[in-house]
Image 1: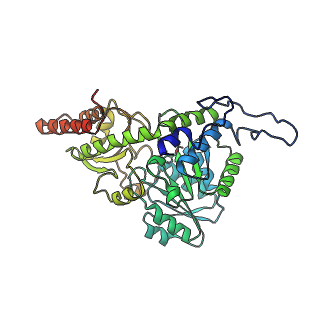
Image 2: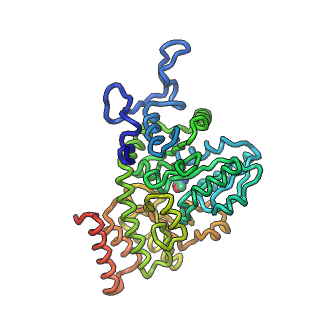
Length: 401
Ligand SMILES: Cc1ncc(COP(=O)(O)O)c(C=O)c1O
């Protein structure tokens, strides 16, 4: 079955006996036992719940994994995966990762005895691996600098050392990138983002290549208590049904916007892997079937960045990404505020950097909103440029209404 079909049906028709097309929400904490030592397979919702199991079946199917586990947030998913490891273990981690993941590693996992080294390229990963390395953790593309890690090379480097490769696939989702097919062992998601897709719930998912490893993740989740609630599981499953069509349309709009931003005189730099001169473009083309809908860009100075954030109307100034509503984020004070300043500056996350999550609005409205936020139209040249964008949008099939 093709990807968009799997998003809707998972591996096959729902096992629900009533024939319900939409998965019922089993809003129950516990389940009656038919007798001593007997179980329906469902005992207590912290360990298993039928609504959550339905989402997990579909997630395993779309990521091509052996099993999936849904969590109350992306952070709960990542924190639980880290409990696979023991004090003294060492992980090699992408230099540039989501600020909350950085905070987890620095403030919690380090206290629990895990050690971390930062590395981005396969060569750097290999060089950073020690006898104590148990896992390599990469985010690709990274949040917010859109750096691309070579998943096949990272898997080879990790496996040569007997370590696991964990990939945060939040930005591209299985619609565009399937790390387990490229050699990764574990995929983690903030399902809050594209998987759920509507900026209305917080969720996380872990997908594993190996069922035995999955059982350990499931047992840890039951012990730690971070499982996703039934109603939220239902929301994520509903979001997943439209993942393919949303991702394709949002990515098409992002491609238009990235080029438009790059041509704008107030924009100094654009970070989007779909641009041919992006340093990770060739790797992204090789390992992913699309470039997603996240764009970071740099303006001249802090004052311009603040003015953009204050002036956008349709695009909301808010944290998060991946929903149908376009959002603009200021990583330096929001998502990456907890990354130490010197590390942040070394990565390029400064007061001039803005991160845009391109939603499902008509791209012409997004261009118009950014155009007015970036400053009044300066002369006919700019008007021509905007008109050209609108023509390209129509040619690309964005509709004319
Ligand atoms: C790449 C990435 N991973 C993980 C997370 C954490 O997810 P959540 O906010 O659902 O806990 C985020 C949140 O922004 C993220 O961007």
